[in-house]
Image (cartoon, helix red, strand yellow):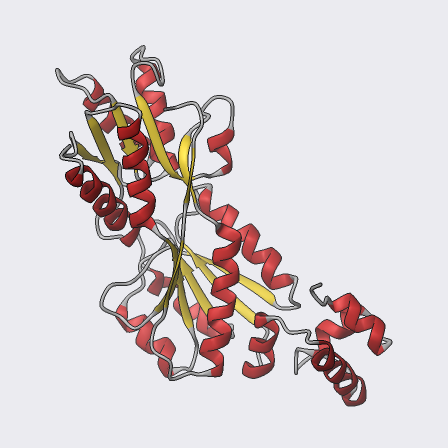
Length: 326
């Protein structure tokens, strides 16, 4: 069974909070008690990546940089990070990038916090920022995206394979005029989901029927899908590169009197909590957020142990969840 902080506290004759403080060098704890707890923890095999990180770096904060807080996928990520990081006795520092700005706009505030590491999600990371972090000895990990042509480490879903699952699912259901609603074109999530979908459709000798841009935005997607469906040759199925755009597609279809899935099938990507709501019941690809967060903290710990390590990308498989829209 997994050894917990409570187990260590029981064997060391201390409180659980004292165990957490023992792994934070700057916390108030006597040297004798700290050593007793650390010896007990080592004997019992009690280690948590985030705690090792704090002990190694002399800091106990991880900065999470988020850009798209209106997308319900990212509050879900925040909740998982908060649980994993705070549960390890560390602190989570949240920085929100204003709409239309790059992540560089908040990095002065991030550096002022002197974090153990920085996790960037849903925002564009510049190569200059990555270099600046490395010079300061701060590990950076991208979450849910990769940065092409950089040595920055990343943890993301297998977007390519997930999109292929969508294509296989729709083709197996007999749909043939399958359209694609894409996101922001310079992001890895859009690029990989489009590439996986297009490659599989091409292999099946069934080219993508039409492709439009939804910009990962509800209103933009609603208008784009409504125009698509009121054309003389509408699709019989749509794959949207995220769930927000899929919700817009469902609402656009219903606004012109179409029935889902009888008249039109719709598939999303992410499996945000709203996807299971009765008003949507969306077929989508689930990202394994908890495992991705765990991989991120493990990767951060490894980067602290070996500052000279080159960028590592960890890919987590997604899983197609079939509901009522196909």
